[in-house]
Image (cartoon, rainbow over the protein chains, first blue to last red):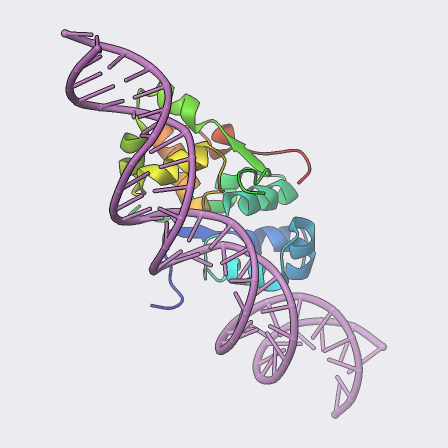
Length: 73
Length: 73
DNA sequence: ACCAAATGTAAAATAAACTTTACTTAATGA
DNA sequence: TCATTAAGTAAAGTTTATTTTACATTTGGT
């Protein structure tokens, strides 16, 4: 079942748009690779809590405004 | 450098006390092993965002009230 | 002191996050 | 149309999270 971990969704792409930020930009600010950001946006895997905290810090909003559990869990 | 990831701290132990909940109890509610809870409390590793979200849901408070980045990041 | 429950810890195994390299496709502007 | 930048994707490799089993230590009650 490649490409559907389910269990969580996020609005990183939207926040990037809102902040006019490229995947690369964000990746650099939180010290991960661009592919890591891409894969998280694509829902390929769940980021660590540290990474999520860093990302929401960059966007200046609460973590739960970006990352949300999906129904079921 | 076993046993110091730095980068994040949490107050799970305190919240458990507040809710009169054992590591086992919490583990069951979020569907992980007791050792996973123990290790996270001990700062041995960083939980996934899904797990952190589940834990804060159990305690009924915001994720950032439990998990906090440490200085440096 | 004894018993039971809760916690701490540790090693080995597995799964999942994350990196690196690299190639492709889409979008934009000169 | 050409060049550039951003985005999508994928495979292989490394690191870190999580499980399982198992045992030691602490704590609380009787």
